[in-house]
Image 1 (tube, helix red, strand yellow):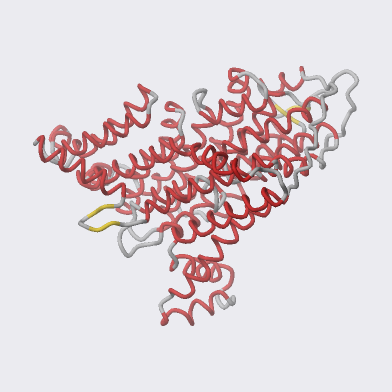
Image 2 (cartoon, helix red, strand yellow):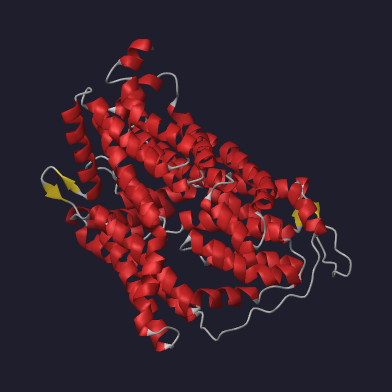
Length: 536
């Protein structure tokens, strides 16, 4: 072991990632931690030679920007542009009143206390394109409705926080997608699976994100709670709240741009993917899509078409279409002045600036890890000691712990994706089951840690947007987040690593989630003067 640790191809090759993780935990500054990791990577790869180390660090940074081996790739630039354009679109939709108008439509479903909670749950899933917008828009919009029917602000903060990141991480088009696809792309071998295809295929494996949405729905529909949340709900009292004034904005100001964002991206993938298919495979793909091989064949055929297209071009096209439509709609409806549009769009785009900095540093760290041979060293260490089936589960726990301690899901993804994916590819070559499960484990585990962390940005924004204190939000939400996390591990990542069908895991996990709420949870007693609702 000591010889392995001191070897340049052994323990030292893991130093960049270890330094990044430790510094992130100690300083809570992910950018600084990643930068130091990149620097350490250059020193290790250069064997301590200072000039060579500087040259290597410059190469890592150049590769993150897109410059490598004398050629420039626009892939990373397109991912950045997509993230900025989507954030700008979110800003325009919010300023025009379109996002709040959509939420107002959802509010109309509310019928009593249960209806208020279900409306908040559905509202959180409607605003799927950005977690920050979700936290602030849904929390503020649903606050008066929660007060009217005696739903505690702690419960509202939980519903908002537990739909924001999970739905944004699951959506095939959101401000998260470019970041996640970019991290995944740098870890896949040439000629291997398309990064966007891996992203899509990993969606069913996001057990924590999916089960959290089920958990919130079960809590809202059953009117049951447990732990500190039950006491917060029992103490809540309905009272007249000022109605959220209707400013006349149309929900189409948000619905149309978001719809075109999804349709434009998928449409480009289908059209360009079909055109790029190998002529020899067209007949086979056509037969698969026609159902000749059943449902699995259709899925494989669709994946082949999507995988043949350039996902970065598609995302860029979809985001440009969405922003153009959002601006045109706001101007046509006279919701915004033309002179104010650039500032509003820029204010929206700036919201993802920190995430993009983390992304570029993560790309640079990934280059450093590749140069030191970290994945080979780690695989050599755990080969024979850590079975491949346990990789999704152990990765999920590590990601959750890292995100909890650092308060950032994006930073955790940036640190762990460059480690976990290469190990999955080497421990289980050709086993896409393990690759998808491990990829999803990082993304979903980051979401869990982010939820439970009191220093997470979305935790803070959810409390602020919902009108409750951060301490109360964390105290009441943590038992629910940990419960969903344990179910995701036991019903999802451990069995899926053993080869159990992902769909069977989802079915069992969903049933177990609802059963937990019904068995452990207790009906919340009606407050004085509050209309009693029947609870099954």
